Length: 164
Ligand code: ADP
Figure 1 (cartoon, rainbow, N blue to C red):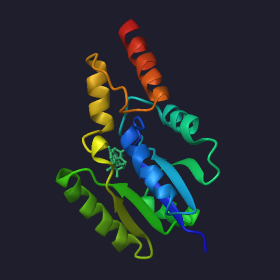
Figure 2: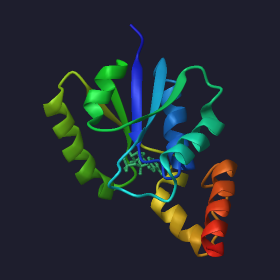
Figure 3: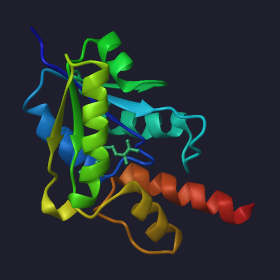
Figure 4: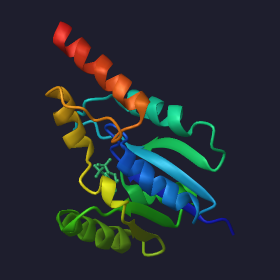
């Protein structure tokens, strides 16, 4: 049976921290589904389409990596796509409490689906999409922390905002 894992998140935008986790998973699973969560209540910097576009630019040619979006409960989505594994990244203790709650709630909702946590390389352990956006907006360099396509899209986005 093929081992299918889903890696869910906001990916607003995808960073090299996310990519580090995806690369580690690539050795472990037959298929990875990068699933961008669509939450109409939570307005991000990038639209769902823009987030998907950036991820597709990076992983569009990998035949074992699927790029998708979902709305609603993650366990329902995982079941629908035949994934028994949820991948999440753990950067620091500060991630732990929320992740612990989510993992146990998801287990309660569907105990056939396991959540597995991966630690990124220490180079990325302080990287978050939120911090990337903050630093970039204040004219700091994020080179090496996000893929070049993301740097480009950040530039476009903030240039547009400045021109408004
Ligand atoms: P969410 O809103 O679901 O937390 P994110 O896109 O912020 O969405 O994160 C998706 C997953 O990727 C989470 O499990 C998060 O811990 C993990 N992640 C984010 N940044 C990093 C990083 N720098 N290193 C490792 N994991 C990360």
